[in-house]
Length: 395
Image (cartoon, rainbow, N blue to C red; front, side, top):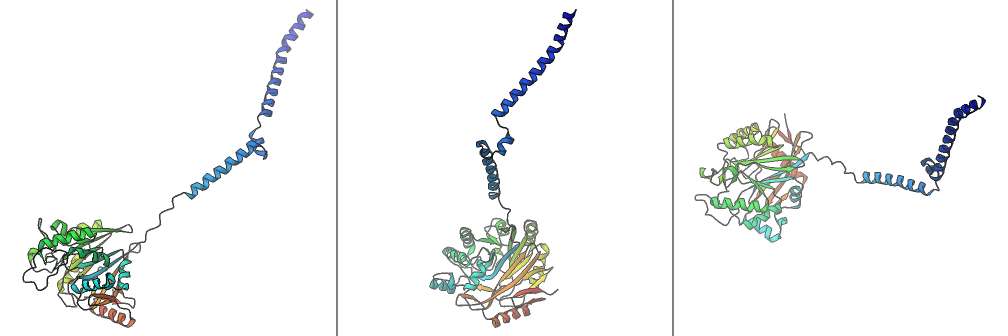
């Protein structure tokens, strides 16, 4: 019985002994593994260790990548200038006086002085009335005192002047017939100059022309209320222009153009030659054009300057007179129209000048400039002109 008890004791304690031995063996194995492969904490705390250097280089690389990402990040787009600078002139005729002045000077500096050339170059868009066709074809219109025409090769002069867009709705566009008008359209297209108011058919003649400037869409339309023959009006398949005598088509096109433009300009050929005051119909039609949706109305044809008027806070310029013409021009000007889309305002100002023998120059003397501004104020309607040539609406 005593021996049996001893065996029982051995059987009871043997599993416990084996368990203790197993735990000890596992502990020794883990200690050996720890000695053979240092922990990350040990590696990081050991600046002289090889693997510690690798870890440091990895950290540096991560920082470098972060810096590179900062350096190559595309910067936010600069806010666009909200002010669009539009410049307008009256009649341009490249007469013999003008072409001779150009040829003698071997360039446009014989036609325009530095002041006007600089003003035009600083504009976003420069528009004028082209008072002639570019063509070598056609026959002069009968019973017409003055008929004008220039060879298409002279279109480069318009580029040198800096013209971006012209109205060709006037009483000289068809001086040499429809072939000459078609040649004019081709010459302007090839020169990259936009045109409005006339074309190969009514669809093109009435077509809105738009130009994108600083994220804004500027639109242009034109018509003429001066021409010698009803046959000068465009038809569905006939070259010609948009009529201002019956403004129905013009007003419809303005209404259609309104939602397509941020700013809409309508250029009209109207009035009586040499008359410094607009006709009553000009004032009525100008208001109709604005009521239809135009933001500004620019006029030409009288060959002299006429005054300005505001209607519903929108400007009407009745005539900018002759700008480059050849004959003596005692008073001329460029009209600056600065549209501030952020501020929601439009500022008009004048750059006065004069012209003789085909050469148009700015007025430089303070006295002559102030006299010019007072003159414009005197022929305008509810408008004052300050010493800088800025027009103000007297509400």
